[in-house]
Amino acid sequence: MRKNKFIAFEGIDGCGKSTQAQLLKEHLQSMGHQVYLTHEPTDSHIGSIIRNIFKGRIAGDHKTIAGLFVADRLDHLQNQTNGILKKIEEGYTVICDRYYLSSYAYQGAHVNLNWVIEANRLSAELLRPDLNIYIDIAPEISMQRLKKGRSDIEIFENLQNLQKVKAAYNKAMELVKNEEQIIHLNGNQTTDELANEVWNEVQNLF
Ligand code: TYD
Image 1 (cartoon, rainbow, N blue to C red):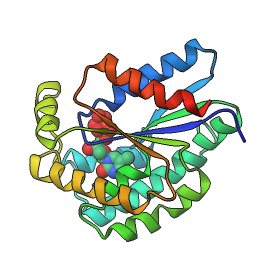
Image 2: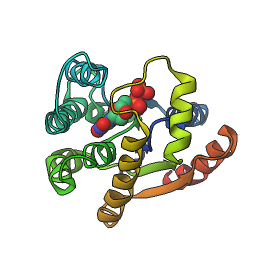
Image 3: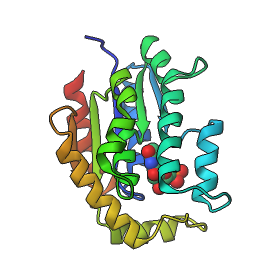
Image 4: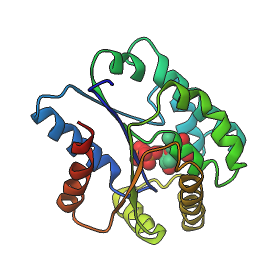
């Protein structure tokens, strides 16, 4: 079994996963691990099409977005410059801020969930997270944090959509619970408390 791990952070917007991903990276590095922190949607051309749709600059419906995420993820895994598979091969522990569970939740809220899971099957076969860390917050808290932290709110960032996304996360996590390692953490605690809980779970992997 490989020693370096692949860890994905999940949760609705504003749950604190980006901060926790960064803190986990620093913690692992301080212990001598090589760590590569990355995110989806990516900064590639495909990722930028997705972001432009979310910003309302170009049109794209939910099925198209679901397809773009499948493509973005496959490129994220396989590209020869800084693809995740290459990094894993090189011995890095890879931390990904969102992976296919995000598609199950965000696209599965609008498009048939089983289709979304099937469409991402290739990515799951190429690389399944050793651990998915789901940080749970209420959609109302998510909206408050989004409004505080940002000037531009994206087109799907509204309370009603976040409620649908959270419900889809729950449904999807139940559906895939036998094939995925998922832990649920409470996002309503201080950054330090949450980081301790993340660490308690992650250290079991090594
Ligand atoms: P997010 O992690 O919130 O990045 P940022 O803080 O830079 O906005 O991700 C951006 C949005 O992308 C977020 O609202 C969730 C969405 N998303 C999907 O809809 N499907 C996916 O598969 C992924 C990875 C993200």
